[in-house]
Image 1 (cartoon, helix red, strand yellow):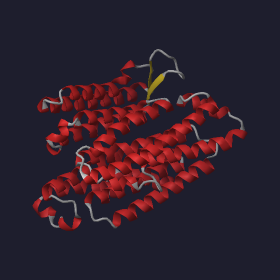
Image 2 (tube, rainbow, N blue to C red):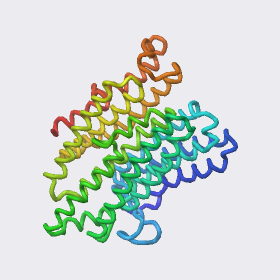
Image 3 (cartoon, rainbow, N blue to C red):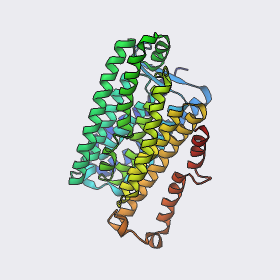
Image 4 (tube, helix red, strand yellow):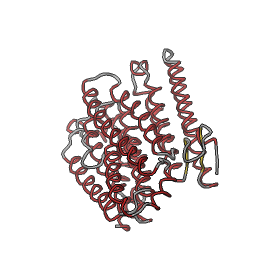
Amino acid sequence: MNSPWLVLPILIPMLTGATALLTIRRRRLQRLVSLVGAAAHLAAGGWLLAQVSEHGVLAAQLGGWPAPYGITLVADLFSALLVALTGLVGGAVAVYSLVTIDPEREHFGYHALYHFLLMGVSGAFLTGDLFNLYVWFEVMLMASFVLMGLGGERGQVEGAIKYVTLNLVASAIFLAALGLLYGLAGSLNMADLARKFALLPADADPLLLTLAVLFLVAFGIKAAAFPLFFWLPASYHTPPAPVAAIFAGLLTKVGVYALMRVFTLLFLRRPEYTHSLLLIVAGLSMLSGMLGALVQRNFRRVLAFNLVGHIGFMLMGLGLFSPVALAGGIFYLAHDIVVKTNLFLVSGAVERQRGTGDLASLGGLYRSQPILALLFLIPALSLAGIPPLSGFPAKVALIQAG
C-alpha cells in the first residue's frame, strides 16, 4: 500500500532539529521545541505501527522516480515497531535531558543534534534501498560524533576519537561493498536485489560470500559485535547520561537491524557458511561481553560490556535462521532497546546523586534511594530473563530454536 505519510517519522525530527537551531539563543523556547518535537515523533511512530498492523506493508517513492531507481521508503511490521520504539525512548530521553544537560551544551546545539540523530535512526529503519541506508547511517553518525564530544572533556574526546575512527572504517567497508554489489546486480533496492540474487548462477557464489563477509564486518562494527566491539566500552561511559542512553538503546540496534535485513533478504544461497559464521560471532559476542562486564568497576562500563553480550543474543536468532529464532531475535532487539535505555538513564541518576560511577563508592545506595534501586532492579531482572518480564519470552524463544 502506498502512503506518502511514511515520511513523517523522518520529517518531524528534521524540522524539530532545524527549529531548535533557529532558537538556539533562547534556551526555554529551544527546550519546548525539543519536547513538542519528541512528542510528535512518538505520535508519528505509533500511527505508523497502527497503520502497518491494519493495512500491511506501506511504501512510498520519493522524488518522482519509480522503484527500483528512486528513493524508496518501506515500513513492514519489523521496521514500524522499531520506529515506534525510537519515538518512545527518544521522548523519554528528551525529557530526561531537560534536567541533566547543562546550559553550555544546550547553547552549542545539543537539542538540534539530538533530533537529527533521531532523524537518521528513523530513516535507517524505513529505507528500502541500501545506498540510502548508507546515507542515513552517515546522518546518524555525524550527529552522534558531535554529541559524543560535545562538552570537550578529556574523557569524551578520547572516547569520541575511538568511536569516530572505527565507525569511519565501517562506513568505508560498507561503501566498498555497495560498489561491488551494484556492479554485480545493477541495483541497490533491497526487494529488487532479493529477486535478482535468486536468479544468479552458481558461479556467482564466491562473490556473494565475499559480499556477505564485507557486510558482516561493516554492520558488525556498527552493532559492536565480536571482535570489533572494543570502541563501545571505551566510549559509552564518557558522554552525559542521556547521550549514552540513546546510543545504547538505538545506535547499535541499527547495525543489528541492517544485519537482519541483508541476511534474511539477500545472502541466503550458502547459509551453512554465512549463518554459521553469524552464530560463531554471536557466541563470541556473548562470551566476551559478559566476561568483560564481570571485571569492570564503573557502573556504565559494566552496562557497556553487558550491551555487547546481549548483541550476541540478537545475532543468535539470525544465525539459527528459523521462524522461531528470528522471532526471538527480533523480540530481544525490541526488548533491549527499552531495557538498555532505562539502565543507562538510571546510571546517570545514580552518578548525579553520588557524584561518581565507581561501584566501590556506591554501596548501600538502596537504603537512601529505594525508588532508584527499584527502577534499576526491574530492567536488570528483565535483562536476566526473569519471568514475567520481557527478557523471559525472548530468551525462551531463542533457547527453543537452539
